[in-house]
Amino acid sequence: MKAYKPQSKWKNKLHEVIYEADTPSGKLFDIVLFILIIISVILVMLESIDDFDAKYHRTLLILEWVVTIFFTIEYIARLISIKKPLKYVFSFYGIIDFLSTIPLYLSYLLAGSQVLLAVRAFRLLRIFRILKLVKFIGEASQLQSALKASRAKIAVFIYVVLILSVILGTIMYIVEGDESGFTSIPKSIYWTIVTLTTVGYGDIAPQTNLGQFLATVIMILGYGIIAVPTGIVTAEFAQSKKNNRSAVHLNTQACPSCGAEGHRDDASHCYNCGHLL
Image 1 (cartoon, one colour):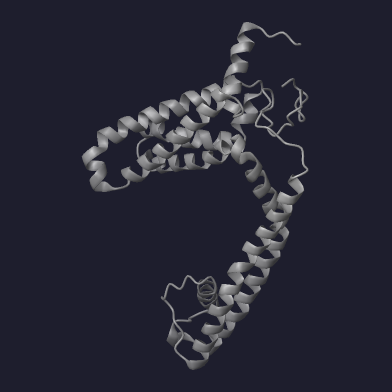
Image 2 (cartoon, rainbow, N blue to C red; image 1 turned 90 degrees about the vertical axis):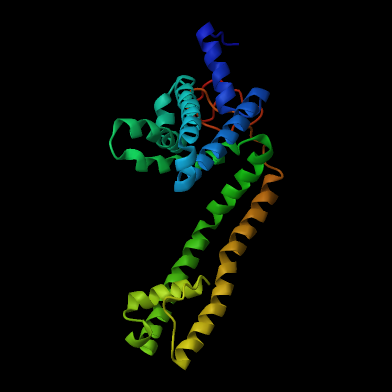
């Protein structure tokens, strides 16, 4: 077995805690991180309430600093626990971690940058990474596979809906005209999409009998259209679940060199770079 230097040992232990969820320490870290993410997002929302922020501004600021310092330490720890930190820095979650941590510091360095504090809400995206916990990894993987498998069908479906919206919007423009608020084809298309998706803002409404009849048809059509993408994803999800029954189980172990995840339980080397796990 490969011998590790004392420095490598603590780095490996740090990597195990931060990047993996199969160990007790890794699970505890993810649970703590999950709680802090929820708290930080709640703080962002509370700060947006003027009366509440005016009354508890100092308390909210202290709590935000505590959370930000924790995330800063976590970000640095992620960098030093892997051999190729730039891969993490420019990864999706690396960018999210950076964007959600830096705003509070910038608010003290740059004038007028307080608006960037709302970017902290991006921390909510980090919950998807925490869902790699053992009890969720299988379902998350199946959902991801289902979405990928159904993207072509959904793309065709959206294309059909757009064509339908253009045709029906043009017809409504001809039928109703300026008097009813259908002043242009783009605005009529906007009304068609709003009606087709059953949103119904009510800012534009048909006045003629024919227009109201067409609106009724579009509304009924909208209910059928809403069910289509749900059915597509559900069918692919069921197929993915069926296929995964015989699939090899993957764990949450992340490569300490390149950060690749999703290794087999019996794997001793990274499938991506060949580094010893």
